[in-house]
Image 1: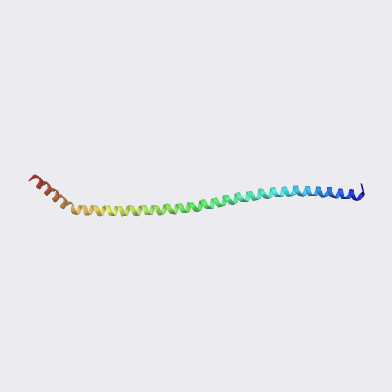
Image 2 (image 1 turned 60 degrees about the horizontal axis):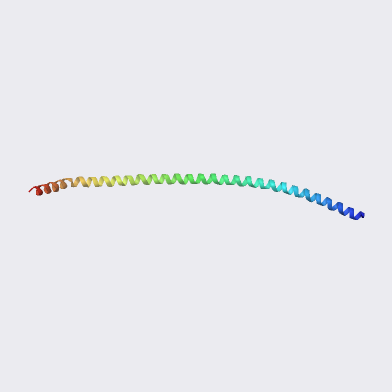
Length: 109
């Protein structure tokens, strides 16, 4: 084999070794990057979840407050209406008793 061929073969082997080293380094860096990106993604996801839960807790608290206020308002309105009906019934109870008594008197005659 000629000296030129031996030199070329040695250069090819050196290049292949360098390429193998570069591939290992690239794989290691890639694995590190994937690990870091995964950790960052999980941290971001956890932060977003926490923020969302806090926001929904505030919304839910506001909805409960409004529902409670509406319930109290409707109870007051229903009580006022019941009191008005009771007052109207009391005003007419005398008249109702008279009508009932007259009905009984008429039936007894």
